[in-house]
Image 1 (cartoon, one colour):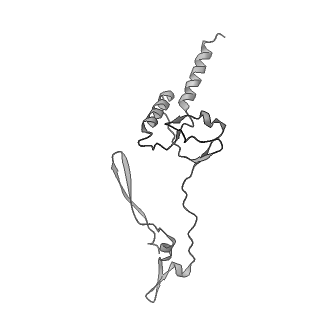
Image 2 (tube, rainbow, N blue to C red; image 1 turned 90 degrees about the vertical axis):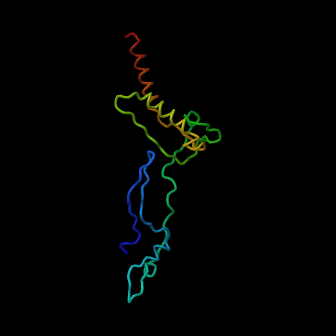
Image 3 (cartoon, rainbow, N blue to C red; image 1 turned 90 degrees about the horizontal axis):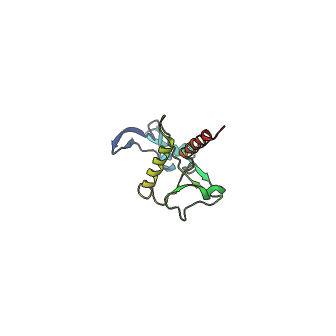
Length: 159
């Protein structure tokens, strides 16, 4: 039984700035396959796992891991692309994927944020499907810009 249900990483191929992982297996795909595993041989006859155990298929695999809920500020939420008919409503929850981008020390947060948003806009409708709603949940470039403007404003005021 030690050799049953083995799946090994056997290498990878890099091509076009993408990595494809190669695996040798396969894993069990059903509870029937698990039950058909030979665990012992008695007098030349196989003893299957299903002969000595009750096998149950557990809960379904998770389809998504992260959700986002929308509150009253959903109307001011910045989006990328045409969100007509796809914009969430107050109280609605949706599946989500989060991508965080960090700037390097010494770079300008405003420029980095603007470049990331511009790239996302270019990719929307091509690499990123048109029906995927892109929202900007945090824009530290905007925050940094606001802080700098406030600092300049206060430096210019007479004391």
